[in-house]
Image 1 (cartoon, rainbow over the protein chains, first blue to last red):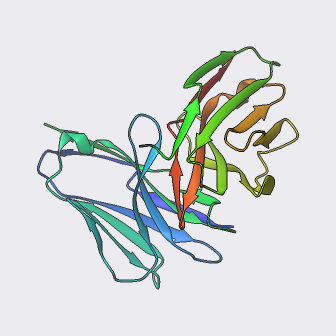
Image 2 (cartoon, chains in turn brown, orange; image 1 turned 45 degrees about the horizontal axis):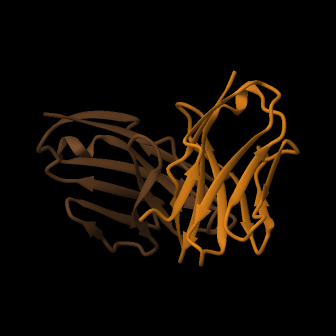
Image 3 (cartoon, rainbow over the protein chains, first blue to last red; image 1 turned 60 degrees about the vertical axis):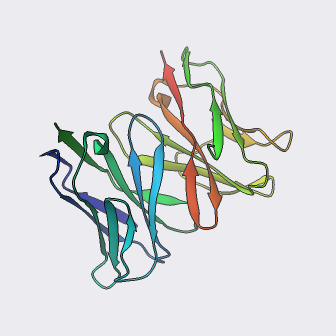
Length: 111
Length: 111
């Protein structure tokens, strides 16, 4: 059975700290791994990773995939209160659109 | 501009009533999906729709659920006879390339 596991489940940091979020996955036919940010409602797309060892960056966020060890990390540097959200990791299973989600990591950034 | 627009944003309905949730994707999108998220739980895949027919569905998507795209633009999810456990946020999504983009969601409360 396909599985996506995220850790930690939650964390609280101070503004300016760096956070590292983990995602491990077991997906039968690996296609990609996606990261989303969920604030009040919809998950908003952050990254799609398909190749091992290639870091993707967007501002203070970056992510990398290790296909051999079956995990990905999402880093947020110099955190701001606006980074407070649930960060979701997901992988397509039988098809590109059928995503298996992890439970998410709730990040709270305090001023 | 959002990839998809969903209505209503929130609906309260009595148990046993029929509910229709609507999604308006950008017109050139071909793949459509419904996901749901029960409060405090993971985002779960319900169904995928391509070329005017269901291409995949999950175990959750039983006979009480149906989808259609009647006029070539709106994509709807119908729940025939709602149950208390159908209370959730329902997300419409579309695919661009191999990335899934979610709408803002429709929060359904069954009382």
